Image 1 (cartoon, rainbow, N blue to C red):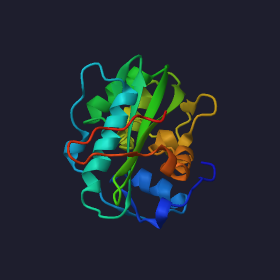
Image 2: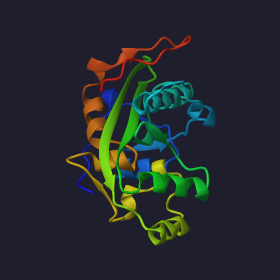
Image 3: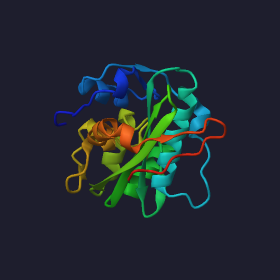
Image 4: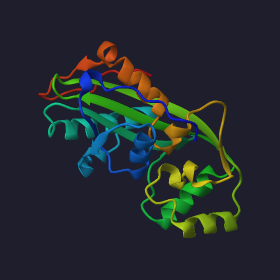
Length: 218
């Protein structure tokens, strides 16, 4: 992966990653960010609204994760994210088990699909927040039964949207055009830099009594 961009945190506040994802932490470390980890509760990632699209889902989940963690930090910049794959209107999150992972891989086999990541930044000292969604298009070659078996046995599919990891060195998956590699891994570092640099201009003040998600900046 190419050199990852970074930006200073507005106000010099400590950065808190509201995720237990080792891949997101690795991306932040690779970009030389200093941060602590405070994962959001499982309840922040449950339920799908009727007719909700993939971009709407990841934006809502990212917001809810940030909202959950923001209550525990008096003065910090909370960063939350959520990633799913989507093909033909079908949303593919993390597989629940090996059989589920196999179903996802067979669904994606030989097809173009999108990976969406919702990103939420929440500054807790003044309750200002911004939400954005980044899309990357990929194409997966047609997988043979042997290819699927080998990948499933590697267990590399665990905890990954769409049951695959772009960073796993698979030559059967590639990005279409100039999409963000880091977005597919789970955190669009190029867009994160832009959000941090423009945070004071784009962030909205959140009413902490029954807060509503701000408008996405996509």
